[in-house]
Image (tube, rainbow, N blue to C red):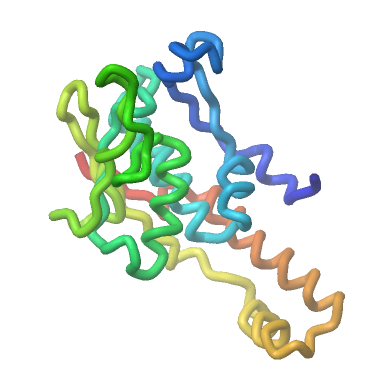
Length: 198
């Protein structure tokens, strides 16, 4: 499986998953998600998928400080409905990493390890996403804004030619390359695109 090389340089997200420890899935319950993992599930890499990954990574860093975030013990809120814009795409990435879902998640074992009911939409927040620890009640709000990271000047024209079915194989390859260049720039400018509100 070949993919852009910069995927491998992106900082991963490490968590503790008590369910996986209980069931002997990962030793000690330690689990790691890399950007390429969420890309495989999403089926593509774009500013939205990158943003969902960054919001989760940076939000959990702020929320847990020097501790490992605990998968399945994080409540996530979004201001949009699940059908609005790219909210569903973002939520799917967040679910993959945190385990939080609305109604489709794991129902638990003897009242433990419950994953459903840990995500809400149309929440009272002005941020892109809000992450809350179930054990302490602490929360952080994360704002993601990649608008300052501009795409290549040829991006729009090449996209239109591809959508119209008139692009050459070289133009198609060029479009994919410059599309991922913008994604890479987003990861290289985390402080510019991510704002944390405690």
